[in-house]
Amino acid sequence: MRSILYVFLLIVIMVFTGCAHTIAISPDISKIERDINLEPIEKNVGYYIAPDVRDKNVTTPGGGGDLVSYFPYKDIETGFYKMLANVFKDVTQLKSPKDMDTINRLSIVYIITPEISTDSSSSSSFTWPPTHFIVNLTCNITDKDGKFIIKSTVTGEGLSEYDEFKSDFSLSGKRAARDALLKMQTILLRSPELRNP
Amino acid sequence: MKRLVMIAILIIFGIIGSGCSLMAPKYTASIDNVQRLKDAGDFAAKVGKFDSSSERSNANPISLRGSSLSSPYEDSYAAYLAEAIKQELILAGKLKPDTDVEISGLLLKNDIDTSGFIVATGDVEARFVVKKGEIERYNQIKTIHQEWESSFLGSVAIPRAQEQYPRLVQRLLEVLYADNDFLLALK
Image (cartoon, rainbow over all chains, first blue to last red; front, side, top):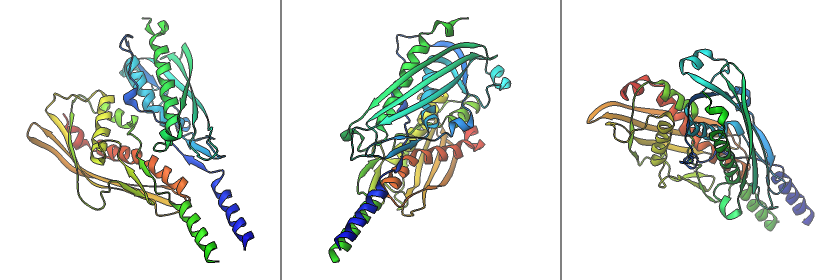
């Protein structure tokens, strides 16, 4: 009888381990504000995320041998838009990097293509949400004809402990995304290349 | 044997549900929705009061296999909807608190069903009203129904449903902004 109990418990443990838990690392956009000491850049920009990139699903480690699964581009896009809106005069989501009709109609000066990579980990063996999250964000910026202007990369880091993440399993990811966006915002606002006439 | 059955039942309940109190993720504006508002032309609007009907299908909190999902805005899903519209108007540069064009509404249906082990569903329905001064220019109900992959495991199904809530509201607003009568009423 006892061996049946052990087999059952083993099955339960097998079922529990190796799960990919869905999270969303969308940062709170009300916390993505421009430093009032830095003037916005009076230029219109467009950004482009290819559909297959936007739909990219990523799985990285959580705690207790479990995994977390999310959509980095979809999740961060709204915060990215807000960050660009803080930096530039106007922002437009482009359907294609060569959408010249929209680019000319809206007087878009720069085209920004983001690249995002992520990683996560947990110091806990008993809870699955990550306690540590990394978001690497790169902005490739060209003019409307595709000429290179600048490329900047930042790393955002987010930490969370059990008491915090028990009501928001995605907290460390959201914090890392926000950190990356705020760091990128500062770099863009301080880039003289973007302010050139 | 009885003891074994009891342990098995307890473990199965542990897998299926968890009995936690959870918060829905804060709303994240949809850039497609924001772009739709920007493309709608020249207008400005403010967001008025959103109420909640007392219908049973208008759940608050939403029950997810014994866990409860609450709104992060004033503990009200009507306030969640108001916040969602406000965020998208702000990002589109269309929110003006001193304008006489006001969007208000009534949340009629708001529920997520995670009882299925394969598919979960979400339903949100709201009446949206646009007034210019005292004149009502728009009054219509919009409804969405969405399905997503669920799981036998509560530890998978519940967080997945929790993360779906903002997407349900994004979809409802996408349906609202696709209505040209709504956009015309704002001008």
